[in-house]
Image (cartoon, rainbow, N blue to C red):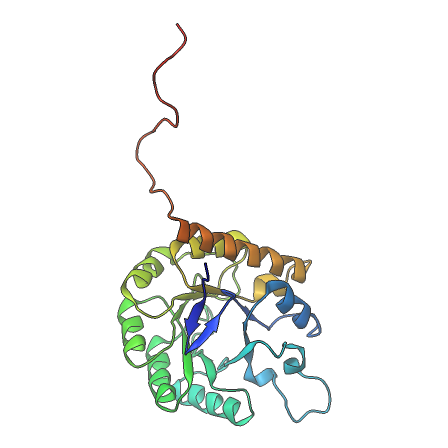
Length: 255
């Protein structure tokens, strides 16, 4: 059975999205993307230099991938919009991950400014995926103004602490019509599997791959975990019970 994710009119096979920051050597990026099997790759625009005669990060992203520049570094909606427009002018396409962060300590997204930027960029024809602090009301407003998916954080970016926002993310999955993609905080393949078993449409991972001893091996592990979690979700998991239930009939004991 074909199980494709559809965002912005594009069908996507891999539910493991990948970030490209923090890699010790950008030449690793292509190998890790291939190991992950990712179809969507995000890159901070400030790392792109299309005028350089030397290699830049775009040289290491396979052509088959959907490039999704992010607005990392934006502190308000105006800056995010400016970065998105610049990315499109540089030939990076119409997909954009809105990232607006004014909090330098915990790096938590500013949902209000993110909503403003999303509304503007959707009207300009962008396929917008906003990174956000989990909040159902804001997520519904993002959906209403045309966000193609929402990307709640699992825990603060770069912490590797896993899905600490699970209860709210679960509510968002049940109440929204757009895909819910957990972004930030996932540190191990088991975290990704947990997200997918819950019903998330996809996950985005960066730091856990970039800092791994074997980034390509870790990417493969995440890819397997995402597939396993998705298969588990589609197969119908049992509900937890409060009391024991024998797996064999409680009759015919030896006397």
